[in-house]
Image (cartoon, rainbow over all chains, first blue to last red; front, side, top):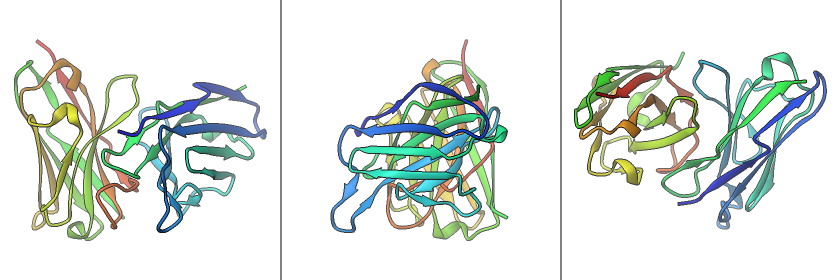
Length: 113
Length: 121
């Protein structure tokens, strides 16, 4: 199974400032035949189910604010919140879907400083 | 509007069984892979199982193989998870989630609110 790790475990950012979350996979999730990274990001607010933010490592899901962006390739990925808003307080998970079983990172908790 | 509504959770003794259901609406259920994902209290997300549109392919995480089965009824727009030989470590909120097409492993674009399964004596 592909193991996903995330850093940091948690971070506190001032309103309007940038938040950066890192995700690393134990093997590449870049599929060479289509040059796509099989990596998604989710946001989970307290007492809510996860919400899809990004897939193919950098494609924003419909309706997701453009302050959320994804980047990276191969084994190293980043989720960036360009200007943190109060409603962005949540735990963020990365997930690989390169192979079955799909696996999630342990999550990164984002709070307001 | 896509809706996924889970039901069937509850308290069960170790070694017992439980059947979860997920009622889908707002989309063509028979066109999508469907998944179960669980989250133990205060913990992260763990994918449990999924099933192809026509039910011909099913996949499970190793920890539930031989104990859990997944099925679907496209006529009833419903997904099921039969859980047998339950253990304390199966205690979690179980989410039903949809995958867009293209293969067994994909992102999960819609999730239900979840149903809590507690395995305890």
